Image (tube, rainbow, N blue to C red):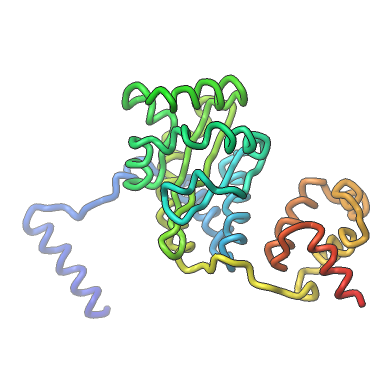
Length: 277
């Protein structure tokens, strides 16, 4: 037993002797074993990220898989207040279709940019539409965002944002949406609050840019996909050639772009062709 451990035990003993119990996180009153298991699954997906773009992809995919969510977005900015101005966020599911209207008309009215939501995001890492509605009437602009943009146009009844701290004091918000009104309940919100802290710890040490890598270092399956991209095949054609689902091909290409530092499918194709010669 180390001296620091003895010191910690002594401090705990003094608290007990004085009638004070050690402070416990309020999350522990809500979280159950299956919630911790889900949190560990997400962290396992993200722990090996090599850079912020890699982390973005891993985090979105992990939330989709382990929280059964299709519609997830990842916005980032130099400050918490500029997150909503991200010109090229990562969007999955319907959030990709929502993006143009959001950027053109609704970004400044986002419910998670309201003072109440920002207080929640700063203090606990997560804010949900359900919680915000219990605090009282929403500001008129945010209410319009919920009613017309989320509700009438896109039929999204569930909306949750999770804050993650990035390196250099930058911030990110992961948005999660679903047509079901209670898709993210009390246990899910508590699990996301736990994840907000742990994912922030991972992100603070990640570089903001992608490392360059040669195609020869990619796994064999990814190299096969690269060769077919270079030959001009579409995702559907690649899926048929390799006997894969088209969604799997899309995920392969996303990971390949992250690993190689390529910004587009065209850039990847040009890189592959140049390395053939």
